[in-house]
Length: 124
Image (cartoon, rainbow, N blue to C red; front, side, top):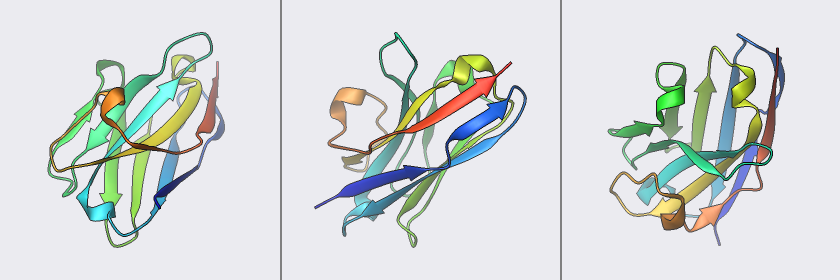
């Protein structure tokens, strides 16, 4: 049984920062590719960032490059998303997801396990 629980969302002013965390239960965390996705009101869910099991490779969607950083701590079975210089366009529900496998993956359809999401709201 694999469960993912996100935390760290909230309301922040434009230009501010938040750090999201995703705690993963189960014994396979170190073999998971991890990803963060988001869904804004009225829009489809999109990939934000991904990281391989070792942390050696990462992916970022263009709008967040240079502002967001994905990282993981395999000893704590936790993946993080540090979000800086937030703007109102970053407002969305942010989801953590896990995919069994070692290759970097950012496609939503390839992920097997999902968290419930955490709301991030950026005010202007």
